[in-house]
Image (cartoon, rainbow, N blue to C red; front, side, top):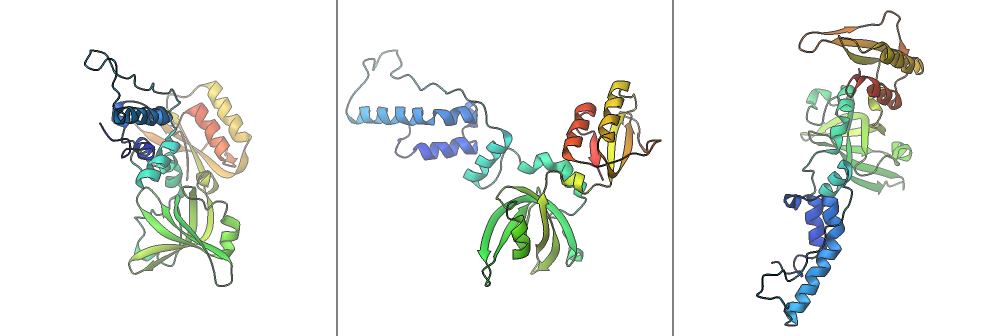
Length: 287
């Protein structure tokens, strides 16, 4: 038994949000919805004990009090669950918000925060990650600028955003937003920082930077109907990006070929999603 004055609602809320009570086998959202009833019940029991009241059934084989029912609630989504973990613990434990963007990060073909090397100093690099530890301040001239840590799956790097870029990018500069930063890498006292030249959303970055679209299909074929649907989607999105076909024989070979009739398309997230609905998740990649 724990004194309700010590384990108050705020403490219980933090335990639920951080996942510390997952061992109870109940959804975090359901536990969270029940907190008010749990705290109210505990406070009532404390008051009754302080007043010297006892249950009519004390000493009998009967429960003294019925525990509050667990409120039914739809479980938190991955993003909400991770945000609560970061809020209460300062770090993620059940995953990472960037996990869903791994394919996009790979398509950038740039360094990670950990793979920056001294040879890259003074050169423009593109890195993807989350905006964290965002700080805004005014320059001597009274213009706003910002600094933040760009956090990827391997670490973090400081980013400086000077006033001219800040004016056009401030809507994207929100803690936990996923972005691509293009900027000059500077190495000072053994630590890197990026002087930002461009900041864009991470969503859709693979498509924006692509010169080739690669569609992965089984060597056994995928049927005439699906082939027509894929062709229609490609033709409805004309552009300058070359289309290649990667034919895969499970446990055998992988062969990348160019269609007999060259296709060039304008990649976009909507097209990617539509193609993956037809061909399967992970069947579309960009280079």
